[in-house]
Image (cartoon, rainbow, N blue to C red; front, side, top):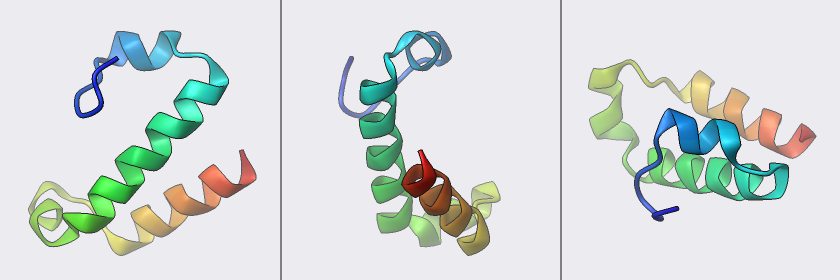
Length: 57
């Protein structure tokens, strides 16, 4: 899988340990680009909830 782009199929087929890593990378990138992503509907609450879900996983 490429480090910057994942298809829905790739995400669905990824093993749990890879999915956890990929999800953390997505969260890290979303946090780094939060200002630009707000126009796409990304919220601070959404990022916080994602972080909590990753921790619980």
